[in-house]
Length: 345
Ligand code: CP
Figure 1 (cartoon, helix red, strand yellow):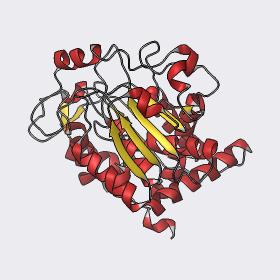
Figure 2 (figure 1 turned 135 degrees about the vertical axis):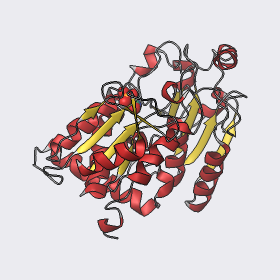
Figure 3 (figure 1 turned 90 degrees about the vertical axis):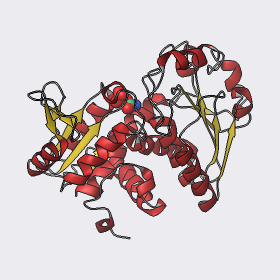
C-alpha cells in the first residue's frame, strides 16, 4: 500500500481507517521517532502549516502538535475561541462574537495545509455528539485535512501514542495481549468519553484481548461498543465488559484506569452533574492501587494525563516502576508526526 491512500484524508476517528492504514501511520511514527533521536533532519512538511483551534485547555496536545510541526519543517499557529471569533454551527451564531464554521473552515483551508480542532464538554453544553458534529462540520467545509485533537466521542491522536507505547513495551505485535480500560474515581465529573472509547477501539483493532471495566451506570456509547466487538472479531482479539475492577485486573498485561462521566449517548439529553456526582461518589473504591496492580501479570500502568492523583490512582502506582505515562505522553509527539506526514505530506 502506498501513502497516497492516506494523503488528503481527515483524521477524526480510527473507525475511518483500516488496520493496514493505521499500521502505516504507526510504522512511520516509530521511524520518525528514531530519526528524531538520532537528530536526523526530516522536513517532510517543509513550510507547511497546521492551523490549530482549541476550545478546551491542553498541555500535551497543543505542545506535541506545535513541536511536531516544527520538527517536520512546518508551523502550527494556535487559535483560541475568545481570541478569534468563536466558530459556530449554522443557527448558533451570535453577532460580533462568533463566525459560521463553513466560513472559518474555508478561510483557514486557504491559509494552511490542515486544520486541527479540540472541542468537548463545557463548550458543547455536555451534549454528547455535539463536539464530534462540530469537528465533522469543519471536515465538510475544509478542502484540506481536518485532525480531531479530541472531541466528545474520540481522541484518535491519544490512541496512536497509546498503541505506540504498548508496542515499545510488549513487542510490535500486540495480538492477544491483555488490555484493560477501567473506569476510575475522580472528584470531577467533567470527564468526556473520548479516551476510553478510542482506547478500546484501537486495542481491538490491534487484536488485543480487551476488557472494559466500569461500575453500572457508566456505560460507553453502544455504537462504539458494537464497533469494538466487530473489530475484535475481525482481528482475532476479544472484547468483554465487567463491573468489578479487581476482576478486570487479574492476569492482564496493561491497565488504563481513568474517569469518564455518566453521559446519555442516545441524544436524549445532556450530562447531569448531580446524577453523575452521585454515581462517582458511590464508587470511590475504583482507584488503581499497589494491591490491585499485584493482581495483574506485572502490568504496565497507562494514563493519558492529566491524572487525578489519590482519586484515579495512588502516587505509588503512577510514580512506580510499572508506570509508562511519560513515554506514553512523549509518543503524542511521534504518533502525530507519523499521521501528519502521511495525510499532509
Ligand atoms: N492527553 C491529553 O490530551 O492531554 P492534554 O489535555 O494536555 O492535551
